Amino acid sequence: MKFRSVILGASALALLSVGSAKADGELFFYNWSNYFPPELMEKFEEETGIKVTLDVYDSNETMLAKLQAGASGYDIAVASDYMVDVMIKEGLATEIDAKDFENFKNVAKPHDTMKYDPDRKYSATYLWGTTGFTYDASATDAEMERSWKEFFEPREEFRGKIGALNDEVEMFNAASYYAGVEKCTEDPAEAQKVLDVLLKQKPYIAVYSSEGTIDRMSAREVSMHMQWNGAAHRTKETIPEAVFVYPKEGLTYWSDHFVVPTGAPNLENAKTFLNWMMKPENAAEASNYAGYMNSIKGSGEFMDPSMNEDPAVNMPEEYADLLIAGQNCSVKARDLRNRVWTKLKS
Image 1 (cartoon, rainbow, N blue to C red):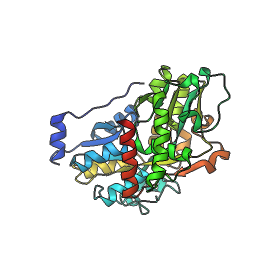
Image 2 (cartoon, rainbow, N blue to C red):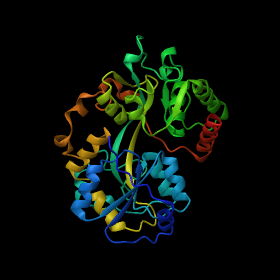
Image 3 (cartoon, rainbow, N blue to C red):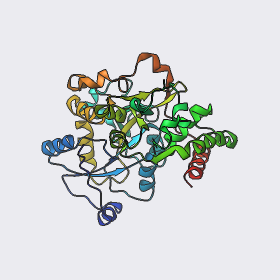
Image 4 (cartoon, one colour):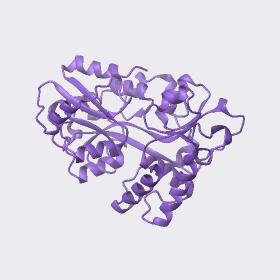
């Protein structure tokens, strides 16, 4: 699928970092790759006259590191639930009072609030979903277990043909569920159990990458991939045999949000964009493209029927108790998790 991405060059980033790029009619958007419809971006530009420049990242931590390093030229960044908390606490988020926006009335409960920003002073809802793994059923004759075991201790036919997300949070969380360890553990002995799971799996991994998971599965470069459920939905469009697994040990439920970083050069344009994205038809187009559910009332009538027919997106009710909410771990727990990830990748 064609994806229009304007990656900012060194000179542009240098300009943005000093917060001096204050041109009317511009918006600098920092987002996950392949996570916003090019056509919707063009529609926004046509309707508002605001030109959008898109820069992309592959993890919340990559985005955070750039902002912490002083890249103050972004008007909007997309942050997962726990990362919203980090940005607020570190002074990296601008107060926007999203509840005052004209179209906030379209936000469905419980998404009109969130754990880390209960009054929606710093964030506006985007999309939400789950993180599990997908396998190509045509690659095996086995009856697969609904368990992380299939991912971390793969059958022979999947060894060397597994894609993992290059994301320390998602990988640590999944391994902690499988190991029976609290994902925000501060205990080095428990973290070692998680590392053991990840190290045992490592020889069977073809690639650690959070980008291109759909293309990689569709081209059958790998037969199994850790994926967000929206990516699994889009994989199934090209591989009908693709199966998204809800592991019995549990899986992460997450939500992504728009945040205006501190120092945004085009604050009013950012607010215009956020209000515009709360229109049902626009939220639906984002869902149809990315394969994730949105939180906007009235968007259902604009949604692709295939979204409702795919269990990867429309989760069967019996799996509801498997969902584990995202969590912003303590500094000690985050440092321990990072050490595990560093050892794994070394």
